[in-house]
Length: 388
Picture: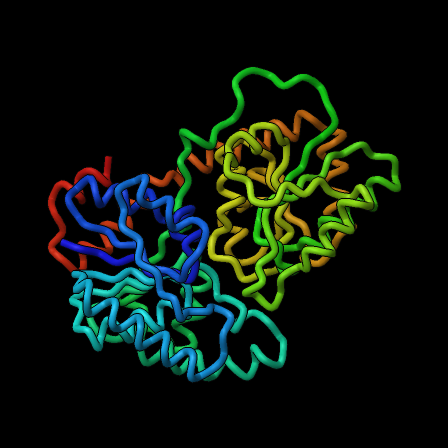
């Protein structure tokens, strides 16, 4: 049995879907990773996973001729691989992958969309112009054939069904891509008293609340607060909402943030921090950084918006909510936790408890394998092992 995992970056496949691929491989399923070229793809070989590149794909492209060539190349790859199932990630890959699967007569298709994406969330002229086109493509591809659509939060499920993009019977809700709660865990023992350390880990998109995070740093520094602001992640040139690298470097020069860039050892970074802040107004699925922060026992500060509210469900209980685009509110909540270290610890403990109950990757893999089982006769060991 062979599966193809198709995403718009090798980084996504490596960081978000490797655990599922390895689980399937242990049960005898051949998994092929498919993406445009990138810096992470070569790492799959270290895990015994084959990686195939889609050289013509540019996730930021809107050129019809280039997109047609991408679909043509994708179809050639799918026909050559002859998978039993193709699992597509993100809206663009889901549309193209579902179309190629139909033409290549792939028996089963799973599409996973984490968040509604730029086209559905931006109010820019380009996004508004593309919205009806993308909606028509989704309606014509994702809901047809022997397929399922996996979404990460009920708000997105409601949006897809209300817009009649996909029949509700074909939608499955799996909250997040999961987190290894053994790797991401609180440090042993009590930390020495020190200035508060807060981290924002994400692609550097304005909609992730990057600007508000930096403004909160400036406000608290003006008020004499000694709080360390860490920023982990890289600009995303393929996204129109990316923060420019030069802007990030100016913030560093002004002493507002310590920019760490891409971080390979996220568990170690989070064990050195106290708070995970994500003041996002991006239409998230379930943010990976929040569930990693929760598993690491950090106090969480985020917005009460789709995706984010799946992790911080009750303000003051398992984290803190701030209004979107409100740097002052973020600064106030950070100051509160700086003054109240008992609350800081209580919120971190509650976040860890929630991560263990709701976001452990073993549960996510089991639910994903169950979706595969709705479409194919999976090896019995794969279903049983995923449930362990």
